[in-house]
Length: 213
Image 1 (cartoon, helix red, strand yellow):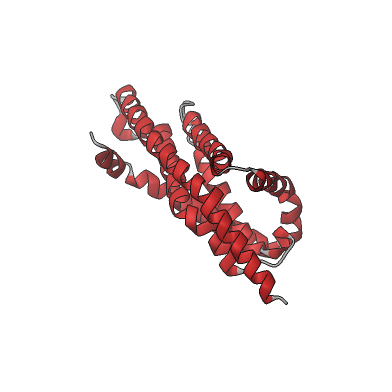
Image 2: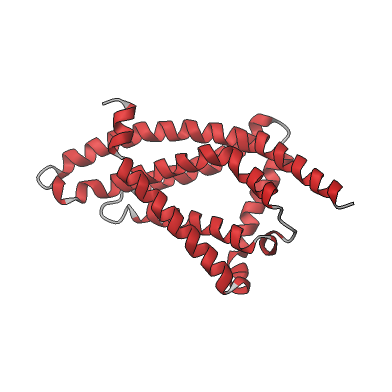
């Protein structure tokens, strides 16, 4: 079975991961409006970790080093989701919670804005900071999470009765093919984020600074 057929066969699982992400984003935005102060306190460790990663990227001297820092973080996250799916019965929970959590974080960023970053957030600058690499990175993550869900749940479905082991084996083989594609996409997204996106954000910040005088 070729890659297009494999991807088409798992489309419902990918759609499920997207739905979980969107639900998480809505929950994050709603929480940011309901009790922003409490949410800021709870998110402090996460914001600090993301800030530390961002500092590593901006301090890196070469395009390859910047891309590697981002790629290593994202590839590890997707790999952990896929490996967790190998745990019998409950393995699907990690990719499901991962999609909810990542969506919630994005919803919080949009909901809290300047209160989260400590400075005014320009909508165009926020767009430039997400869109260039996000159009590749987000589908790659949704794809990886979708196949992790499929790997963790497909063999438990009623339709797999009598052939659960064979179903799991087939899902595992296809998941490895999809994971290879995801890693390539994440590599491309990481290079764009560490170089193109960073340059756009810096130029946007410079333009905003000039307009303020």
